[in-house]
Amino acid sequence: MGKSYTLLAHFLSPYRPGELVETLREYDRKGRLDWKLVLYQANLSFCTPLWYSRLRQKGLLDELPEDLQEYLQVLHQANVERNEAFQASLVEILSSLQDMRIHSVLLKGAATFCDGLYGSSGARLMGDVDIL
Image 1 (cartoon, one colour):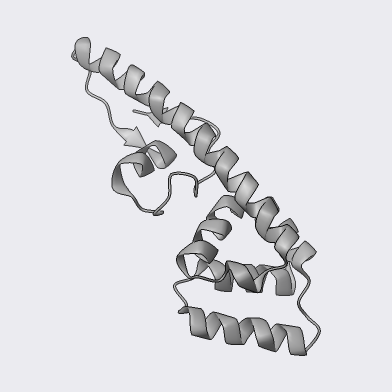
Image 2 (cartoon, rainbow, N blue to C red):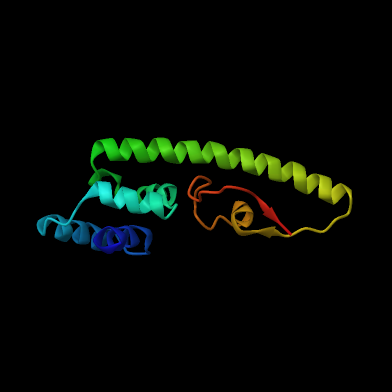
């Protein structure tokens, strides 16, 4: 895990952009900045779309190499489209449950469609929709 995990955690944290830019520069000065390892860690942790969202929210995309920016943007957009499909399915399911007077509760990722927790519909990587 090590340094790439720590750097990724800084990106995902509520750090202010100025503090994060300084952390990036410090990592770069010490020769500890390896974008491939950070990307590997983000993919391993299933948070690559969230990483992109946080970079965009904090105005830090320009700190990354251009090819990495493009990759993250394409991956995020694909996840937006995937989550929109999940959301459309969820609306159908909930409508059917409501018609049958079955009470339901959205769990985990499905609940994030309602609360705006991540600030972007493509930030959370999901594999299914959980309903109680």
